[in-house]
Image 1: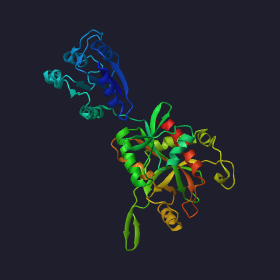
Image 2 (image 1 turned 135 degrees about the vertical axis):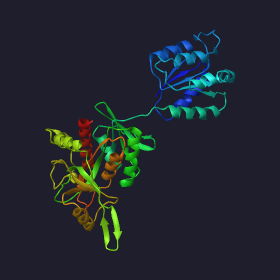
Image 3 (image 1 turned 120 degrees about the horizontal axis):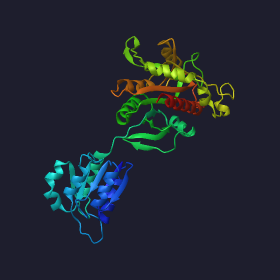
Image 4 (image 1 turned 90 degrees about the horizontal axis):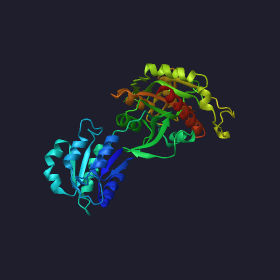
Length: 390
């Protein structure tokens, strides 16, 4: 956010800058102390906010007496030819007579007035509220939702993101760039459908991404998926949606497919020469991370039918139940359905997909030994897909 502060009183300037720097948003402050310099700055560049005194020197010379410049400020900044014609202006003045005598004109040109009083903090709260209204909407090209911190940490290990977390609108975020495209990695407060749906819907509304997606770990259906396979849901449903009756649970499943053009593009990308090799490249396995004792990382990436549910599955009977819902079901986890539904129902219609790597078969033999590598290759696959799709 670029802010121009027009003020000739050093003490007042310091207090104004203190409020601006405490807003919790990245602000670039430019200063000037006269009408002449003010005109130069607003002619050169566009600002997101202008903060000005109403009583200023014309040229800023030491011997020059400040004067009421309200009409001059209005004339310069509200000129139709000005780059800052629509820029919000906040006038902070300790000369209340000047503000009162010009109230009608200031109001007509949508310039807000705050009365400054040295030694008082009352004006600061009003100023703070006005600044918040002027903060420009920040949009991102892509959003990656990770259900677990270890899944988000994979982007740091891969060298795609820095280990720096910020809070944006109550969401835990890491900034990331993919070939000039700006994005965020967001980790919900908890894993699961509810938190993912809330975070995904909020992220779409707040940041208006072109793509929203997921990376991370999942369970695979034995015989359909192997450890470290990266499965992209071509269609995804909620396997625990339905009704409990006297005869047991009756499922009521609604599938959400990938956008047709997205599915075609993803299938093309993952089959391109070098894509899978790039995902596996540089990933070193410890002994516990090897599958069947093999030091070679065997990665397959494909689209398939999957499902999501609210609970971790580590039971043979539940596994049989999930498998029986669709004969071609390949994997299952706890979030992708929520992200697909949030994106599908959004009026902004972002592109969406999920790409998670298999770490177990959803039975009683569960452990963490494959998690690091699975999260890492999933992150690398998502990075490559975004680079091609965006």
